[in-house]
Amino acid sequence: MTIPRVRPDFEADERSQLAGWLNLQRAIVHWKCEGLAEADAHRSVLPDSPLMTMAGLVSHLRWVEHCWFEVLFLDRGREDNPQFQESAEEDADFMVGDVPLATLLDDYRRQCAVSDEILAAHPLDTVGRNRDFGSGRANLRWMMLHMIEETARHAGHADTIRELLDSGKGYY
Image (cartoon, rainbow, N blue to C red):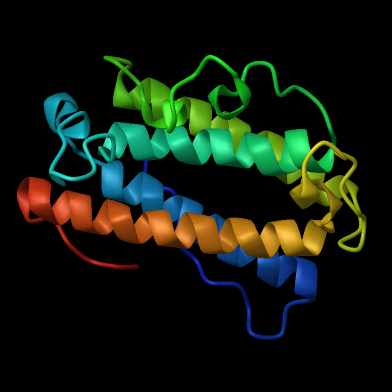
């Protein structure tokens, strides 16, 4: 299923522009996964970054959405997030084993829907509730901007990974 890759309107209000840019970057990640063979989705192409597979990247993005909007902003549900498990290895959110890419993409899509509900329900100036981490003191606007940056950076990684896997390239 192709997710539309649409830039926000030039004259849109701030919230619509922020949400539009975030949704565009999310859609690019999904696009980079379209038609990818399962073995390739789990294949490492960067020797010094063996966890940076397409599947690992999608998993990471799912958990980053959860981290910023559910854990840091709302101060809820950190127990399931591998980023917060004391016994977990570093970068545990990239470790997906043989979980199918389609499952990871569905999980990411569902997490983005939860994030979107949170974003729609709060003013941009609302400060996060989590006081266990300094980042929980950021306001929702800052968190949205950070998620645009985070997702765009990893969309670039996905573009590179895809080109190294099968010469697929293109942006937008």
